[in-house]
Amino acid sequence: MRCPYCYSDNDGVRDSRIVEDGKAIRRRRFCNHCRRRFTTYERVEGLLQVRKRDQTHQDFSRVKIERGLRAACWKRKIEAEEIQKLAAEIEAHILDNYEKEVTSEEIGNLCMEFLRDVDQVAFVRFASVYRSFSDAQDFVDELTPILKIKAKAKKKKTSKELDS
Image (cartoon, rainbow, N blue to C red; front, side, top):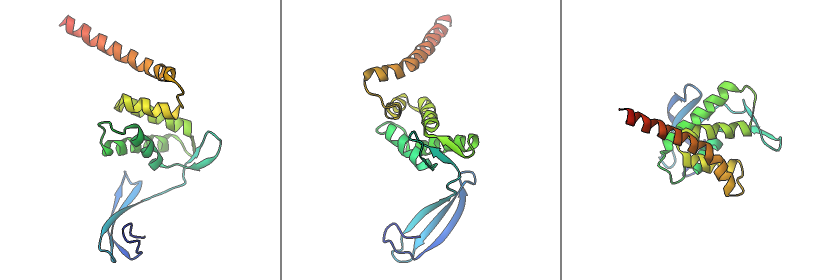
């Protein structure tokens, strides 16, 4: 393994631990050349294929999900750890429910479903890119169901307060 700081390939493993419920191994490494420490992760790849819209295939990558979630959550009050946890939950759901192939559309829909519960602004941002919104009406169409649910919840809360 090459050191990410000095690019020397003279390192040693100091510690190895199983992480992500046994789906990965985290290794703490020490570069014998520049004396800095770094972490690497080992995961099995290529088990699940993603079929893209243009019908091409590529290996499933949680990193891509994280990148999309991070972009949607940019400048929102969402911690990096929460984004990583969200990506891990999405990955676990996909690995539990699909054996060999999943479509990019199904992954995008899952991301939106999970984001809707975390942050509605991030959800709309993700949806606008994923669904290729072209004008303001697309935003209105996506927001209408959310606003209806919110209005119903507010109405229920108000009626309960009046009953008390």
